[in-house]
Amino acid sequence: MLVVMKAHATEEQVRGVCEKIERLGYRAHAMPGAQRTAIGITGNKGEVEQGTLEEMAGVQEVIKVSKPYKLVSRDLKEDNTVIRFAGTEATIGGTGLAIVAGPCAVESREQAFAVAERVHRAGAQFFRGGAYKPRTSPYSFQGLGEEGLRIMAEIRQQYGMKIITEAIDNESLDLVEEYADVIQIGARNMQNFSLLKRAGRAKKPVLLKRGMSATLEEFLMAAEYILSEGNYNVALCERGVRTFADHTRNTLDLSLIPAVQRLSHLPIFVDPSHGTGKRNKVTPLSRAAVAVGADGLMVEVHNKPDEAMSDGPQSLFPDQFDELMKQVRQIASVVGRTVPGIGLREKVGVSM
Ligand code: PEP
Ligand code: MN
Image 1 (cartoon, rainbow, N blue to C red):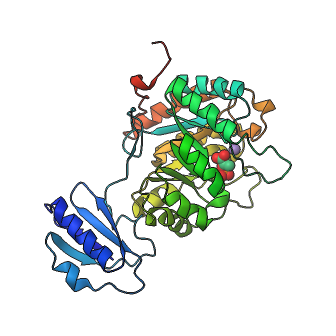
Image 2 (cartoon, protein in one colour):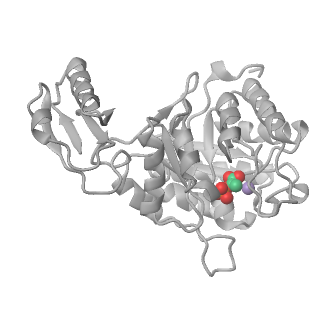
Image 3 (cartoon, rainbow, N blue to C red):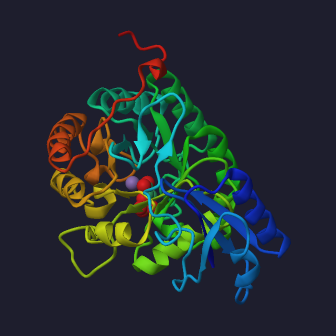
């Protein structure tokens, strides 16, 4: 159920409707838009008694939502969600593209800084690096844990880039929430519902990656879990799905981008690194991702890919990332997007 407020409804009227919904024992999710505010109702088992709400001051209409997802839907919020960060003009969503780059895993301070220096110089506004790695083998490198998070916090301090890193369970999510700017939930955890709920109670934005074989509806329902707990700053990420193809690690499904954008107001990234598994395919598919309308890219870059402790074959050399950025800027301008820099005030410790 969804309450659409009149275009000129006051804040007080919106608050009044939310309070009424809560008094009825449901949860109210007010979503302000450019034209009007809509209020999503969750927690109702059956139908909500429409009449009482419809008669309230400032209410335009009460609509039944037939889709299984509500809060992520454009029915509730027509305008695209734009996630903003203090001290930088870089956003996730909006006309500016969000560029996330960095190694698969933070392996050492030296390695992480070597990569950060290069991706920052090339124009990435967000630095990625796994501190908690979900690995297929229990014997593979599992990440540096909190030490990795501390290194990334130093990188933010040095370069002003915002930090995105994965949480793999509730315990690591507590720490990631403390250190990072964006909490990543990986493909393997897309349907870890208790983790999604915990992310929904976090105070930081969440980047949710598509599960290895998730349908569009399953993906949106996973995001719905996060929003239903009150965290509306969620971005999605297409990272390829498992198919029979063996020329590529996964099959990057770029058709998902317009499909998501039709149904949902949430921004969507493309990760061409995990999407292909091979570095020679990363730049061409980055161009395609921007052309198809992605709101951002997540790209793995390593200073010494041949020695990387994870995902070396798909990691770009820093020079290749420079070239990728050059090409992405060209495509961006064709589709009316820009690649904003990070705020100068944020470049703590960097001489200009
Ligand atoms: C990653 O981004 O480091 C990662 C593990 O990706 P995915 O969850 O998409 O496999
Ligand atoms: Mn990786």
